Length: 83
Image (cartoon, rainbow, N blue to C red; front, side, top):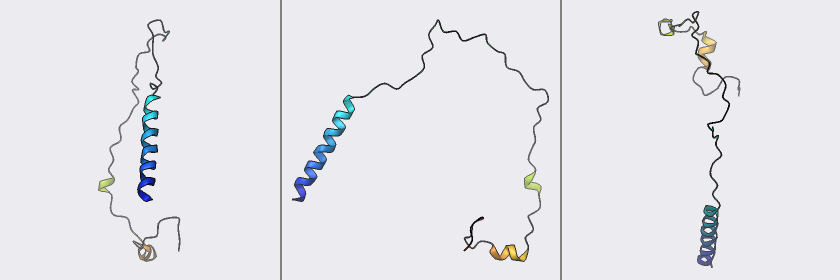
């Protein structure tokens, strides 16, 4: 009987979920008490030699390909794999 199998399976799953919900523990976490020794505060320091590099890749000319490279173009072969 297929109906009775589904009833037994659904009952077992329901019972398993119901009993699993009872055994819920709170997640672990760090609690910093007022008596914790955290050390002296350290001021943030900015590096005066920091440089920002703006990318100019959009201004580059398109890459040149040899005819043999172009023949391999978009045929589904990825780098490192061969047929």
